[in-house]
Image (cartoon, rainbow, N blue to C red):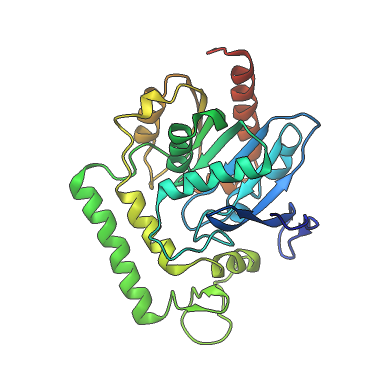
Length: 299
C-alpha cells in the first residue's frame, strides 16, 4: 500500500527543490518513506541509498535533478533514519537490504542500479548478495567493504559510539521527543548552530536515537572481504581522495575486489556529496554502469 505522491517542495533556506515523497508499506516489514522522480519514459531505475545519520533528502539533494534527466529515481529513508521504518528489533544492515528488496518488489521498479553512499554501500552490497535478480548494476560512493579494519579498530569504533550514547543521555543531546532526536540541550525548540539549514535539523530530528546508535555499532562489524568479489555486476566506485572517515586506500581496495568496477577519483572529503558539482559525476558513473549492464560489456 502506498500513499499518493506529494508535490515537490521548495526548501525555504536553500537553493534547491526536494522531489516529492510518500509513505510506502512494505508487507511484513513496516512503513517507510520514499522520494521519487519519474525520469524519461522507459528509463532504468536508480535506487539511492543514503549513509549513516542522513536521510534520502540530506544525502542526495544535489543529485536528484541531474539523475532524473536520465533515470527514474527512487530514494528511501533507511530504517531508523528520517521517516524510515521503525522497529523494536536491533538495527541490522541485512534488514536494511531486505527492506530495499521489498521496496523494489512493491514499486515493481527492478532490476535497479543500486547506489550506496557511506553506510549505504554495505547495504547495497548486501542487496546484491541476497537479491541478485533485483540489481542490474552497482555504484559505490565514499564507501568500502570493511568499515572498521581489525579487531582493535572495531572495538575502538564501537566504544566511541557507546561513549557518544552515554554523553547524549547525560546532556540530553539525543533525547527523544515528539519530533524524534533532539540534537541540542535544553527544552523546547533547539537553537541551531550559525549557518545550519533548518531543513537539515528538521530531517535529523526525525531519526530514531536507538536505531541510529545501533546502526553505528552494526557498521563497525561489517566485513564483506570473503564475498565482495562474488558481486559480478557492472560497477562504479566514486572514491573521495581527501576522505578521513573512510580513507581512499580502503575505497580503492574495494574497487579492486569488485570484478567489473570502474573508478572515478574525485576531490573532497566524506561530505563531497553535498557539493553542487557532485551530481554531474554521479550521473556519469550511473550512465556508464547502465550502459555496461545493458550490453554486458566490461569496458
